[in-house]
Amino acid sequence: MKYIIIYDQNNANQAINKIKKFPIEIIKGLNDNVFNEAGRIKSKYKIPLGDSIVVAECITNKGILITSDYKDLARFEKEENIIINWFR
Image 1: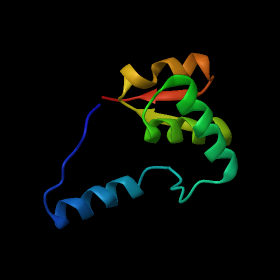
Image 2: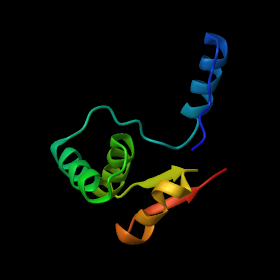
Image 3: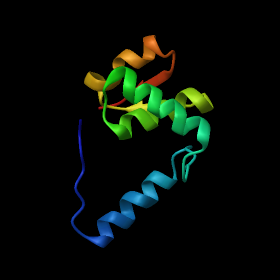
Image 4: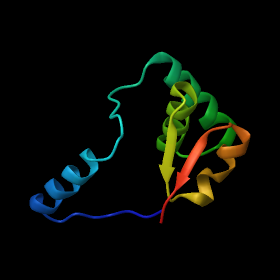
C-alpha cells in the first residue's frame, strides 16, 4: 500500500483541490446496510476495518473501487464481484 505524507497546509490544500476534481462522491458516515456489510467482510476475510468499509461501500452502492493495494484487495474483484480500477 502506498501512503502519501503531506508536511504543510499548502501542500495539503493542493492535494485536496486535485482530489475534488475527480468524478467521485464523498460519503460521510455509514448507513446500516454498509455497516452490516462491512462487518460481514471484516469477519469473512480478516482484513483491516478501513478496507472492509471500502469494499462494503462498493458492494452496497455498486461503486467502483480505485486502489493500488493489489495484495489485499484483488480477491474482492472475483469473490465479491466488485469493479476495481488499479493505479500505481
